[in-house]
Image (cartoon, rainbow, N blue to C red):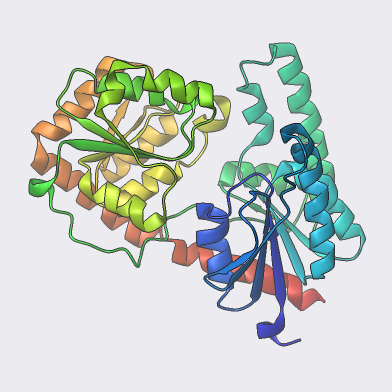
Length: 372
């Protein structure tokens, strides 16, 4: 089997086709060795983008609930039709179909983006008792299925520690930035009074407090990403601070980088939820690579990291006044902000680059193919 003819199929019915980790990092990297397909369910149709064959299984005839139930099955059927050499899925909803593919003799990888049992514990709209039961059920199911797949990819050492107990071939692929092609001089003297947040726009990511924090200070917020719901979007738009928000929607990595270069700081003030306390914040690495200081939650793990590299300020994510003070401090002290940004960029280039993760991704694939 020639490597150039090997067919790889990534599968997601939850994430958008331009997801940073799935498309811009993993799929684009893999096109250098393999023929890459990406199955999605977003209603935007089939296409080829940057050598990646995107196949859309969205069903317009179904209700929203019906699509949620059937998209995974449609993705499974499409995956079987492709007859790929390796299948790489990204959603817990697809776990049972991933197991079905494995039982048909296929090579199957589960890419674990979140610590799902801990994430369920953060769902405040579900009663605590039900959350605990669901968390335990998911914990058992993930362990059972993961032990039977070809490989597991996780995003943090903490998550990998759990999955390595089930599957010997469990490896960490960190969400480090892939911005090498977007390089530019970061001139703090010419920046506008703007900070930025790029990512999922949800309640527990501290966006409401961030918008409140800029209400009474001479700062604007560059905001990009997808809202968790229309109701949360409406709630934010009704806030007095929303008038100082520049909202860009869902944008490309290049546009993200340009927004970061314009900003005096990048903000990642997530709530202290179980899933976040031990996580690696991808956005922090991206802010560091862009050469801007970070304003982050004062979780012990994050605080230790930021103090080690001297690349930002940690605050209580629910303390609006402390967030305002951190932003004002960086605005009023551009030389300190510039030094923090330079420290962060140096660390990002030397220690937190996607290039190293790309090598490990190739190694995982080649090990699987070698066994065939």
